[in-house]
Image 1 (cartoon, rainbow, N blue to C red):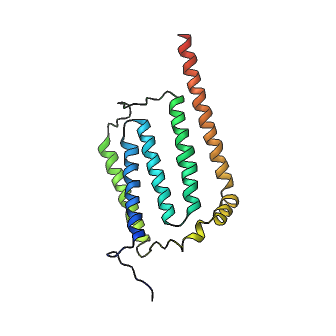
Image 2 (image 1 turned 90 degrees about the vertical axis):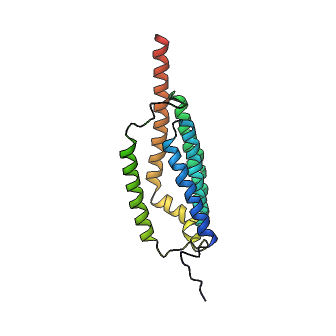
Image 3 (image 1 turned 135 degrees about the horizontal axis):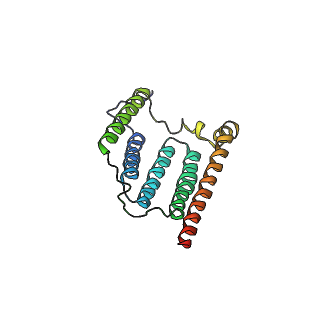
Length: 182
């Protein structure tokens, strides 16, 4: 006898998935609305960590740990390092205040509505079965996909991040040298 699911009787995994999804949504909104860049980076850590939690609920443990190590660990540290090197304004600034919030909000809500409609329509009768999803999230499956199909984009991204770091150093040195000449 198989258990049937309905929208009125969700399992604990689905409730946790939705609650963590709300944390992702809230922290993502704070990333783009907060006027302090360091606080935005810290909210990005919360957002990316919650996405890793979603991966854990889906049974993709390796992807969750890669999310934590690469995005939370490396990308956010690189972002903060770039902020410090380029002497970007760290505290609240008026430069980050958007003058045209209403059109941006309308476009964002329209895009979110389309995305939610498409996702709900696509996964209307799909339920999270944590042990059934493990086969796609295993180290063997992810390693095969990474080293067979995604090795060139992965290495290109690492070179791009290195170039961004070198560019941040060059920009900060150039402004330091021009200040010393004055």
